[in-house]
Length: 333
Image (cartoon, rainbow, N blue to C red; front, side, top):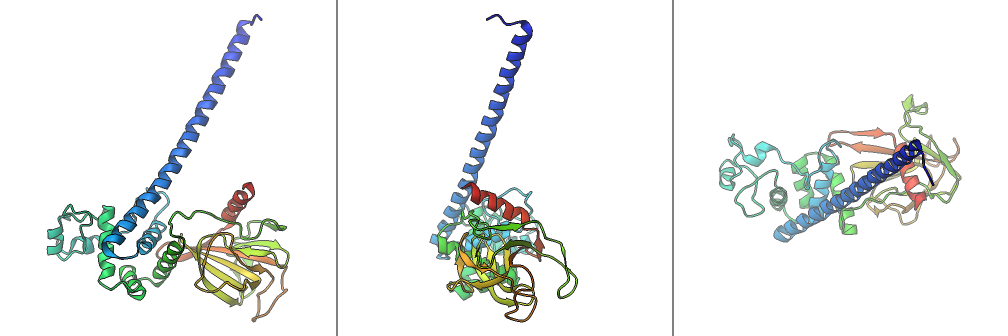
C-alpha cells in the first residue's frame, strides 16, 4: 500500500508518541519498584541495628525501635529519612566545654559527655546509628532493665509524659508483632455494610458551647461493626459527655484515634490491649450529649477523629482524606 508523505509523517509521530509513553511508564514503574525496595531495606537495616545493640546490652530491641519511631514522626515530612532518628542534645553528648565537638571517645569522657562508641572505632559520633543506639542503651542501663526502670529512663531523656506513654505503647505493639514494618490500614467500619460520610471536620457544633467538629461522621445503622484502622494500643474507654461510649487508640505514628457515639464494645476489648487494622472494637450507635446511657439525640453514626502529637502539643486534623484512602485500598483488594 502506498502512503502519502503526510500519512508517513503522521504514523511516525504516533509511533514516537507511543514510544515516549512507554518509556515514561517503564521509568515510573522502575522508580516505584526501586523506592519500594529502598523502603523495605531501610526497615531491614533498622531491625538489624536494634537486634545488634540488644545482643550487646540486653536492652530489648523494641524500646529502641519505639523511641526511634516516635522521634521520626515528630520531624517535618520534608526532612530526609534517616536510618535512625533518635537525637541527643549536643552539649549532653559532647560534654560541657568540648567546644570543638570532638568525637574522640576519651575527650568526650573527659568533658563529661554521654556519647559512647558503639562500633569500636574509638569515636562517638551523634550521626552514627550504632553510636546513637549504644549511647541510648547505656542511658537505659544506668536505670535498670525492669520495665518500670526503662520507663523512668525514657522519661529522664524526653521529660514529657505523653511522649513516654506513646513510646511504651509503640514498644508493646512492636514486641507483640515482632516487626517494625507495620503499614496495613483499614476503614473504620466494615465495608460490607451500607454507610455514608463526607468531610465534616471543622463544622460548627453547639452542644456544650460553641466549638468545631474534630472528626468525620460516618453514618450507618445501629450495630454496624466499628474497627481499628491501625496498629496501636487501646488507651481510653468509657463514657464521654460529648462522645458517649468511646474508645481511644494510640498508634505507632504518634496519632490518637478517637471513636465516638458507639452503642457498645466487643467483649474482649480492654484498656492496654494491642490491636491491628480490622480488629472489631464495638458497634455503631447514637450515644452521647448527656449523662451515661444517653442515646438517640441524633442519627446513629461513628464519630472518627485523629489527633497528632508533634512532640510539643497534640492537635486535631481532618481524617477525611485518610479514611477515603483506606476505603479505596480496602475495596480494591
